[in-house]
Length: 85
Image (cartoon, rainbow, N blue to C red):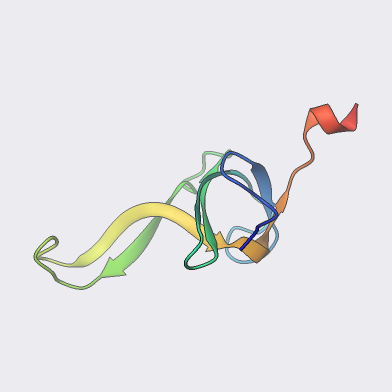
């Protein structure tokens, strides 16, 4: 499937917990139609928390920190300075 954004693009989140935040795309997860974001504003937004079950890799389970991902439809590309000139 073709998306309107790609890795490295600057985007604006338009829905969800991170609405109004600017971010850069670190990865595109095509199997789940999601994008992994790195936020430009440094207010504890680049890392999210996720609950995981107990397993051999994580014998205690619980909360782990990981990069935030949102659905690809909830981001819009930000116009770059090159295209505005």
